[in-house]
Image (cartoon, rainbow, N blue to C red):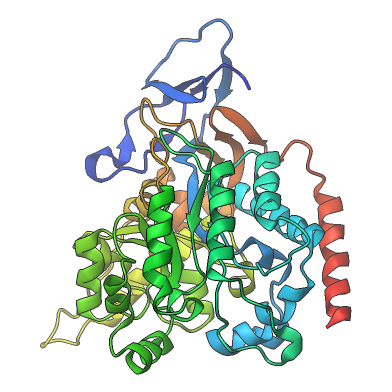
Length: 472
């Protein structure tokens, strides 16, 4: 790692912060020992500096992806599930294919997913992996951390699992034996003792993340799991309220709403993050806001599965921590952060406009400023760091981790922009990634990752997909 990097002449620097601080007046930025030490104009080169000329480039904090399923990187566009909603899609795609994942295939899928994210400017990834069962022949958690380390990203394992099944398996061949409660907790403890870091600028973290607590744990187990995690000093994560079926199930099984059920069982608070949160009553929104519970907002997957549009702006106003996740590529097909933030910016404006009443009862036209570019960037950077507990990460400021993406807007889709700073979000596509820096280390240069043979990776993926299709 170069000890000192001086970035010069940027067109714009967006910081990931709010309000007047969302845009820096600086054009130059100095990195020393993995930390931003200086921001300003006309910074002078020092002996030993590596100088990066960012002329005509825009600089963003590295994206923080707070909810993914990396194993699904080899399950994009499965025909049987492409037009299905969540429950039948689970039966047609992940529940069919998960039994075919061994260590080699998991590593390949993770590598593909991490590289896809890196090339979009992502520097921190939280992976909700849930393929665990008694007597596994390999350590899936260690394999994921290993792949992340090899590529240089910050990585958090949202360690999934279940002590009971969803009973959605199509047949006995799709059945995966659940873990015991003691077995799951002990495995999480073992993984956390090895990989979980706290304090400033951690590289790796672990969360206790039963796949969907309303169906993955028995009712008496929820508090036991939450307390075990807090005793270990690790956060909590799960899927929640993705479809209306969550409400239907909780009303029938527990006599309450999903978020009320979580609150009764110690599953809310600033150390808890919940993926999706599409279908919420006002009562549930207030619980989440009052407790400062985190949201991993996955707008593209929610649209793809016809779940709906999660109330991210409303939750933020109420006090919840909002972040962005790409979810699994099997329910997204393009699991990168640029396409995610572009869609996020658009969908909330569309949603706000759709709620407008025709004159004279309503305003006629409104909603175009309901979700701003700077707000979406904040969710996908600083919001992600807050949600996952990555202190000292997620914004561009002195003393923060030097995690940043330098985009060169050199393709026609960006030509003609009056405000280049917003190009990566508003214009979509994939801007040229001039450099991606994580902890002061350059991990992408001119759209290339050193040591990655993209042609070989493509061939591996194609061969593996064909092999899986043949096995089904």
